[in-house]
Length: 90
Image (cartoon, rainbow, N blue to C red; front, top):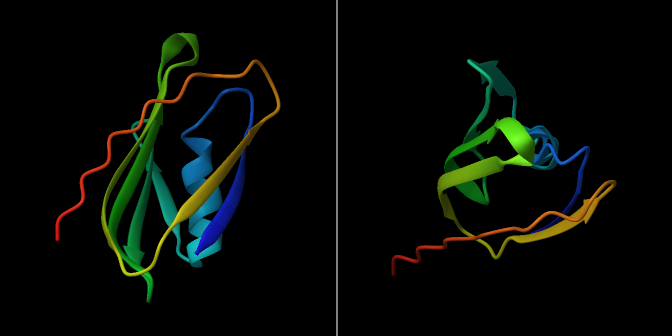
């Protein structure tokens, strides 16, 4: 599964909203966190995004993917630095 999403104004958590559209799932916002509970044929679990001060954002993915997932980021502002931590359980 390939997903393109735009990081607007360095607000990475808003990307979770775009992921919800790609997975055709509803998201909720609680205490500044964007939460996506996944019950999809290609993914089961939870994705959470939060935007902090000074352009710091995080997306936490706690899910099982049944297919490869490609995230293609594009940015409309100053290019951010991304750190990814991926855990693969076989």
